[in-house]
Length: 123
Image 1 (cartoon, rainbow, N blue to C red):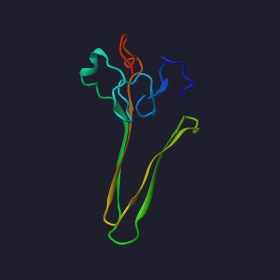
Image 2 (tube, rainbow, N blue to C red):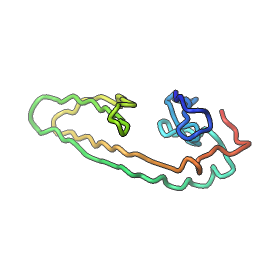
Image 3 (cartoon, rainbow, N blue to C red):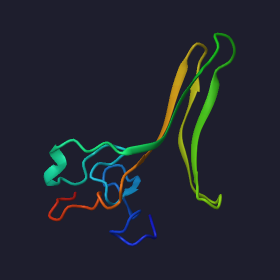
Image 4 (cartoon, rainbow, N blue to C red):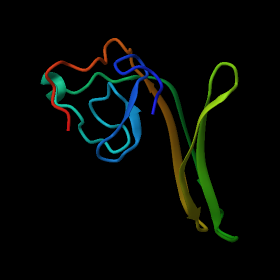
């Protein structure tokens, strides 16, 4: 969990459904997509987040050869180059003539606009 004070920008908590570490201000878990809080505006679609980074790429195994194994790892570094997070996302294998598409996106929202509404229900 975060050492940031609860209620401040960047504060985190565990999703009660999937146990991933998520932002405390999230109304929907970005990992399992379960609703976490039912605010008055929860029925209205959320404003799309700013996506300052989005990378998509694919790999295709050639028709000949042995299967390939792959590992997807994401790391985050601060402005001093120190690694602040390192996460194994998934592993798998690709057989000849198979393809995998990988997408990495970073979504950003203003911390001021994401404050939890008072009176919302959490579960």
